[in-house]
Image 1 (cartoon, rainbow, N blue to C red):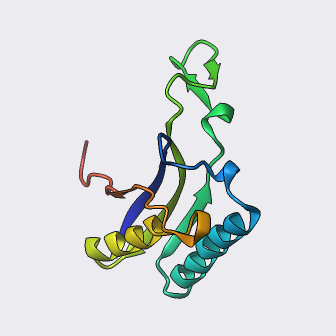
Image 2: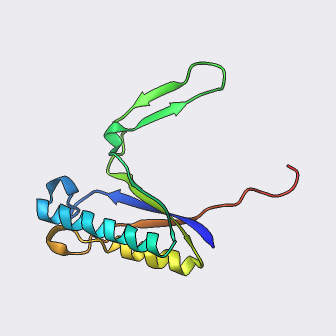
Image 3: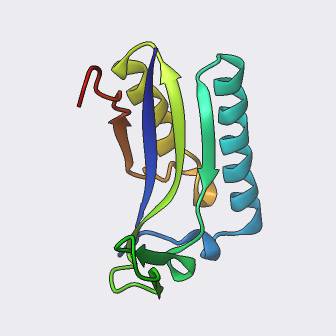
Length: 133
C-alpha cells in the first residue's frame, strides 16, 4: 500500500461559485457526499485522514531562524483566488486507485447537484531515505 495526499484546491474566478453563495440544500448535499465518501474509504481501509481547511483569511505564515522569536504574518494574502480547501490522505494499492478517488472527489455535487469539477492534486507520500545520511 502507498499513501497519497489528495489536495482539494479552490480556484475562484469567473463561473466559479463560492460555497458561501450556494443554497443551503446544495451545501447539505455536498457535505453529505463528502461524509459518505469518507465512510466508504474508511470501510475499505483506504482513508488515513480527511480535513477541510479554513479560508486564507484565517491563515498565518510563520518563519523562524531557530534563534529569534518567530515572525508571524496574518492573512489575507495577496493571491486568495487559489487556495487549499482541504485534503484526504489515502493508503491505496495503486496510483490508479488514488486517481479514481480524486476523480470522485472532483465530481462532488455543487449548485443544483452539478459536479463542481474541483481540481484535485494527487501527490504520493515519500518514504524517508534509508541508510546513513
